[in-house]
Length: 101
Image (cartoon, rainbow, N blue to C red):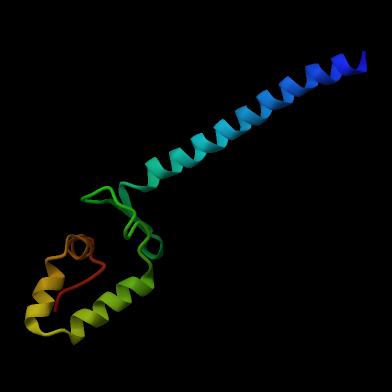
C-alpha cells in the first residue's frame, strides 16, 4: 500500500515542479519583453523607447552620461559631430540629459 501512495505522490510532485519551472520561464520571458524595447535612466526616472531591439544601453547610468559628456567635451569638432549623430545621444539630448554647448 505504501508503494502505491508513493507512486501517486511522485507524478503530482513532478507536475508541480514542471508548473513551477514554466512559471519561472514565463516570468523571465516577461521581463525580457518589458525591458528589451526601452532605455531606462534610473537617476532621472526616465524611460524611453529604443530604435532597435537590443540589450545594449538598456539601463543608462549616471556614470555613463558623465563619461559621454566628458568624451564630448574632450573631442574635436568632427568627433563631436560623430558623437552627436549617434541615435542614443540624440535621444539623450532630446530628453535634456545631455546638452550640446
